[in-house]
Image (cartoon, rainbow, N blue to C red; front, side):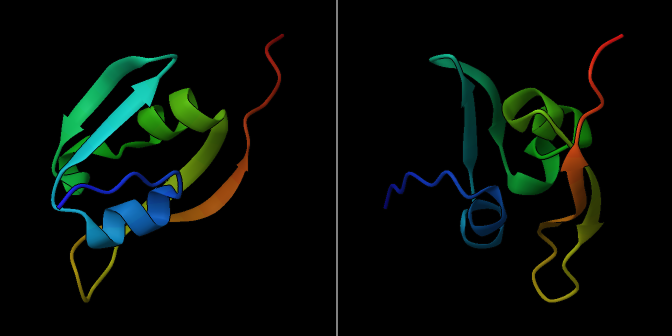
Length: 72
């Protein structure tokens, strides 16, 4: 089954394989635990976050999501 989700938290929880895209280009692909990093979240959504591991599923959990500081 193929699903398209823009909610990264739901995608991490329910998908076995993620394809992250930016401006029509694939920027990362693979299992959520390998794909979702603070750098990827910053690139895709321009926010900072802390990543935790869901104790029930082992999938990444985004916490402490906040706007990235404006460039100097």
